[in-house]
Length: 233
Image 1 (cartoon, rainbow, N blue to C red):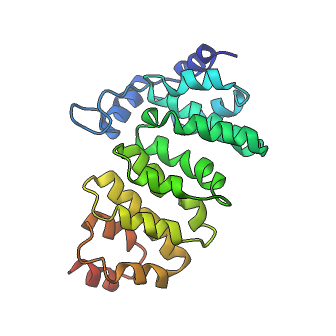
Image 2 (cartoon, one colour; image 1 turned 180 degrees about the vertical axis):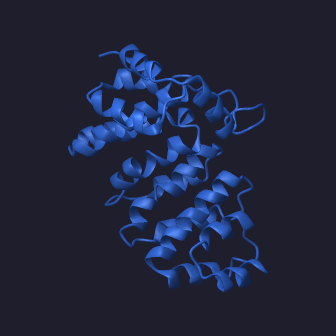
């Protein structure tokens, strides 16, 4: 099995019209966050099928996938990595997966690549470990590492563990980029689904000065009148 085998399988599913749409959707124009990214026009469900078929690809193959200029090839490589991590619970193997992931963050360079991989890898890995790594990522100068830091907390939040999510949300509270504002708001909303009072306690001293995009995401599931009260300030 080679990276060319997997690339050919993805290219066979490619659709030029979808590729053009995805290029616009993921903001690949000059100065946009996905500038220069290239697309084949393959859907995520199709990529998941390819990832399952080639789930035994070795790390050198995954490296070639994850460093590809094509968005879907990078994502397929990440989906294979997640699949391998999920199925092999040996500590040494999982450490290798995490090290590989962290050394390739420059290629995990769009929000879907982050969101479909980080909490299934880093979140699971750090569940019973020191989580300082997430704080280091939150302080990174790389936008995608900052998004990895907050979205990785999804694994903890779903288990009713909010501490790191709220702490990292605080670190990123005044971030200027909407991709971080949306991610923080999304994770805060997930906290609220588990425990609305915890979310309200977090918002109480902060909602008047946090970015409106972040706040709108955080309170999306509040009753309409309550949402209006938060947004009026």
